[in-house]
Amino acid sequence: DVQGMFLRRYKDGQRVITEFDEAPTLRESACIGCTVCGRVCMFDAIQAPPGAIAIVDATKCFQCGLCVSACPTNALQFRPREGLTV
Image 1 (cartoon, rainbow, N blue to C red):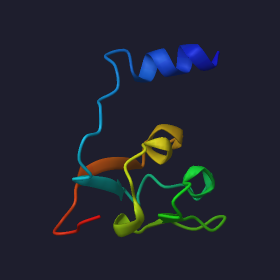
Image 2: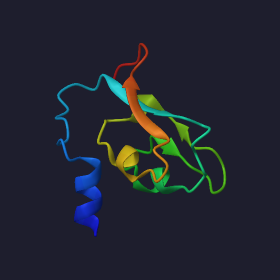
Image 3: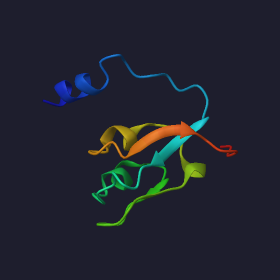
C-alpha cells in the first residue's frame, strides 16, 4: 500500500535538491491541524500544535520534503524563499 501511495504522488520522480532556495509554505485554508508535519520535521522548522494551524519557520528548513510529502491535505508546498538564506 505504501509503495502505491508513493507511486501515485511521485510517478514522474522526485527532484534533486542542490540549493536551499525554497521553503515550505502553508495554505492555511487546507491545514486541518493534524500535527503530522510537525512530527516528521527533524529540523524543528514546523510547529504544529494539535488542532491549530501549523507555523513554518523557513530559516530552519533544509528542504528534505518530509513535511510536504506527509501532509494529508497537501496544505504544504515548496515556494521560493523570500530573501532568506540558510
